Image 1 (cartoon, chains in turn blue, red):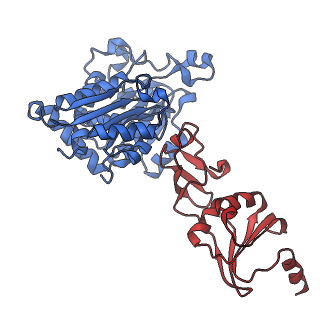
Image 2 (spheres, rainbow over the protein chains, first blue to last red; image 1 turned 90 degrees about the vertical axis):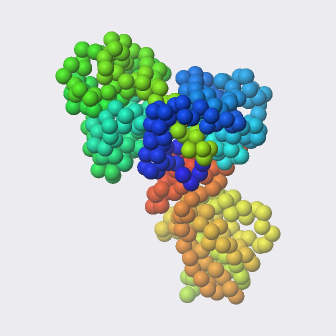
Image 3 (cartoon, chains in turn blue, yellow; image 1 turned 120 degrees about the vertical axis):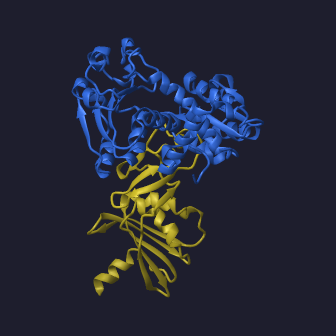
Length: 304
Length: 154
């Protein structure tokens, strides 16, 4: 890690990914050993836009390691509402804390913050750009469920055009010889630049319009939410909103080791009857987010 | 020979300095601004809308008594990739150079992503040049691509 901040998934190498995953596994196995690792450390969680799930996951990670937390959950309760620049907010809070976790609606804000901050920045989402801790927790979850990361068959479903998690995941998984299947409405297809990336890396992928075609061959099904606001024409949304709903009955005859992942929040793209199926893994994936964030924070602070 | 003399007469010769030729006419004023010629105190001659076989219409800039560094000159490569740089000493061209697109660019152009931090706060743009022929830039902040067709001055 050249720069201690984690702004983009590209800041980490394959070695870094593996190290973070090993560390997350250690925290998961022996949580009692690390309750005081962050004693005396203050972590700031600055959420310039609300994201309750991500914020609580980070705060749980810090608390489990014995650290303290300062911050805000949305910018209306901060000096941003008085017109303070991001630069000044970050510079000031970096005097109060040992590490800053930030979420901001503007793309590139986290990189800018890492340039002006006196302490490391962990990007918890900068607009549609990057959300690297989500990507690392997805890698950890895949490794945990499959016992390996190499040669997995991964099916991505839903909004593949705007979904930043699927884009980061493609790039991070490119080190581990995967094959991909992409299932999405025509309007939300995987953008060309990522398909070009896969071609350059000689990673096989196939596009589909029907989920049932690929369920039986997949090791991982990664489902994302199709958001109404992505469609210029509401009729188009109505046409496709139910086209990719995963139901429990569809999981018959799938591989025994198949796991279904979702970055959450879910709306209706995974039917609730799937939740009790052993192949559903999305809530466990959320727990893995805590272990992965514990690993990232303690690694950046040089404590592990 | 006579023809050459006529051509030279369009813009007076300089004794010492830098001549930047083959600037596309539409980019001339951008080049002037990038090089911050308005801040220079030496004599500068600017030619605009000259005929050019290669470019249709071109611009030319003659800066007396100044020898700009290749690094500074490379900044204009985004807008005038075919520009020729002549170094003049005692009325003679003693060195001819071309501009080269640098590996990274700071300032000069805007990121075309309206949601980028550089378009929302007072942040200088920084790009990695990922393609030099049809110049393509990747923003170091929002990681989005800005291509040649969308270059706009910052």
